[in-house]
Length: 105
Image (tube, rainbow, N blue to C red; front, side):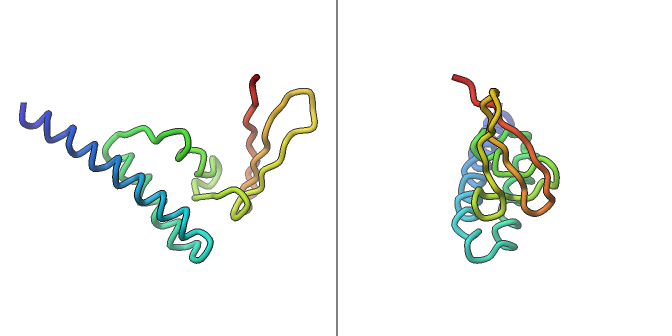
């Protein structure tokens, strides 16, 4: 019983630290990109270690190609599609990987 309670407490602490690290990384990305990348990498490592699924808002801040921390307008380019299929095109400016997010109505 005690081990189970400790596991839940550890997961709550991990979630809190992940959100803090990502918030700091977002703020720091304008001034020091290396520090922001290190903070985001640490948050991702904590999530993997504790077997936590990152929320969608945080998951989309990582490039699917190079796994680096990207922010729209700073280290990635965001464009809307010009075809019938409404989609957003996100390009990582570090590795050049392009991925699409389909917009549904």
